[in-house]
Image (cartoon, rainbow, N blue to C red; front, top):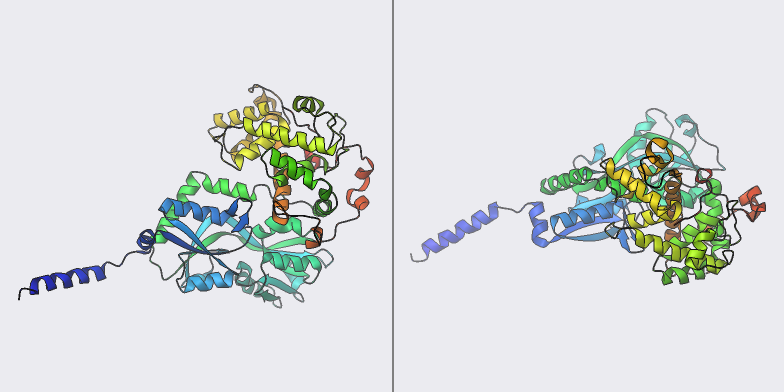
Length: 495
């Protein structure tokens, strides 16, 4: 009898404990880990120069920090594996680059994350261009398994009977694009955001038209979970929209992707193989000296001169890094047409400009500001930042300031500034172009990769054009600045 009360109490405690099953969110906090399943893709997650990155990864990392837990990734081979893991409730969130689909209703919960995409029909430029769905009735469309397109295409067969497609479980978007590039596939369907990120590598691939409207991409959560994690993630996404983080991430990963045109992409990859090897060691040496990524320094050099040491503009800027006489004198460069001196001067000058940008500005925005300053001058950049702040936006965010730089060309705005008129659209394009060139170099070259090794980089995409045909008439003016986008005009870097 002496044990009756304690035993009854114990049973009561056990009963109560059994009735209070912790929520998914509480389980995550108890373990201290958010388990995420993803796949490698430039639109989702990849290993960058400074570690893991990607739009969805960066957002998931911020969410884990918000919860105060560790983000633990499992890397899947493809979306099929991502969906399989989620269906068995073996991960909390899946990052697959998919939008919500009717078929997901009883299997997954979807949370839109700010990026929209649509299915784009692409084709090899030597194939017949389809103008509408009816032109595809006798064609085979190739696509990644468990993609948005797989769910979208069946609805199109009601409109145009006879459309056929083939899914490729072993291929990702890059694999599909590579086969369209080579001509193995004549037609394929690719997500628009993945096409934007990779199009420059596949200049033989052309875009035809979109299949359906854009839809917002989403994180997927297992249907077996309760709604506690979904509610917390929804509140987090709303907060990220409100404070501008979503917009800033979108600008960081997609804001520079006005892709190179066919000629520009082929020419760039050709020059990566045939010009960059001559200067790679110099870029590496002086980038190391001045504490910067050599591929960024190379991207600046390509934007300035297409890696031509004898480039000269009518306004007097010259050399591989296109330095003005005043700038060269200021940083101690004697011969601007000497490739080594020019690269050394460009690296030194960029370091000086970068150091003037306030340290409170986070990367990569601080680098984008430095590039804009390198192009248009620090004073004009500060004018634009003051205009940005005066309009109630953030002067320390590139995505805000780049809206105000073009206003420096309009009298109603530049008359309010300290340094006056500037062709403010040019630094915006300048930064965008360098970001694009750097993006390509960072994906095809490691920081220490030897590009003279067996197999050229252009072979990874398509053989480059003949030197003369690639640059046409502009190559005859070897003493003139390389042909850059016409909107950029000719503007020297100035202090």
